[in-house]
Length: 406
Image (cartoon, rainbow, N blue to C red; front, top):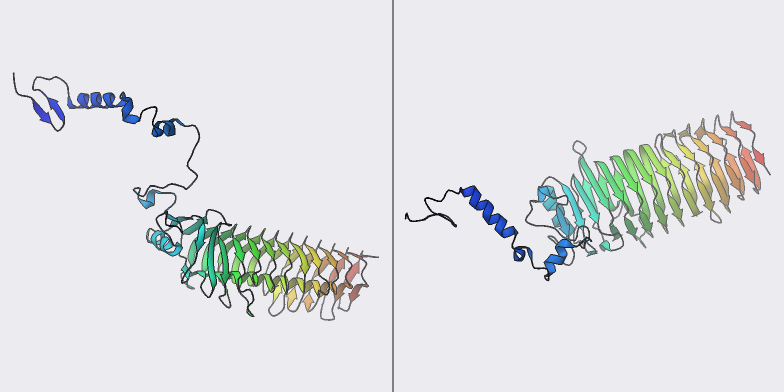
């Protein structure tokens, strides 16, 4: 009888008619029929395998053996060390080196010891905006993405994080400069610049395009959002409370939408639009506006602004519900509700070709005031109740009609 020969672990005699493939199939079948190969029925793995309920919370596990480029999430961050990274900047640098991707931040308090630098194609999502906290501890550090005039940074998105106690003078806790396609969504902000004499905003946007600031919460910061020299910006459905200076400011912004925001106890001005073109300020609710509810124009030509369907409740001693100030033209003030103990409901300053229509004003000292600097104003269909002075018209070429004054 010939001696058997062996291909690795498969013994085979010379006169054995089976092929290697048939022998492999037989070994696999034998393995699959062995219950102990896949855990016994009294072992934990067996019950885990047959369970109908998913017992791993989303993003709670990851496989470091998978190449990062194949993962939907490129990096995980955990302040306690139970992930690949324990600090956010290291995760950002790692993902940036891969060409970008998503970073998931587990709950914890993160104390940056320098600026957090954001690059293009970075998506940071926290586990929960109550428990994922970036605390700058009153320092001048901030999160920032800064491109150049010729090379913008792009595609940067922040979601479900909380940022607090930044004191970076002149801009904000999160700074975007020369950036395109950015968003800040469902984040919380707390006490930026609080107690300081200078303004510190939660979010500062400078020379950017395609920006969405949506569904955020700001409490006791000196200002919520400042936008300058930018195009196509939407600031919508944010809750802003206890800000002693400013809520939302747009300076030299084209195609600005400020919609559905709720302001409570905002100091100097809730919404300020100056030098901007084709802005729409609509469906906002402003409570206890201490100086101005909405300010349009002042220093630079402002035109094509529509202020409509806002509710403004003035605090006692407020100056104006809506002030259209200097260098303004072709603005529409329509269907707003203004009430409270303020001095003026709607004021037109140095404004040309503006329309004031279908507004309801209740309980302010002066309902509508059209200054001598205003020209070609249309003031129609407004309702004024319980105002000491209903309508004052000092402008030229003013058309008044169908206003109800009681």
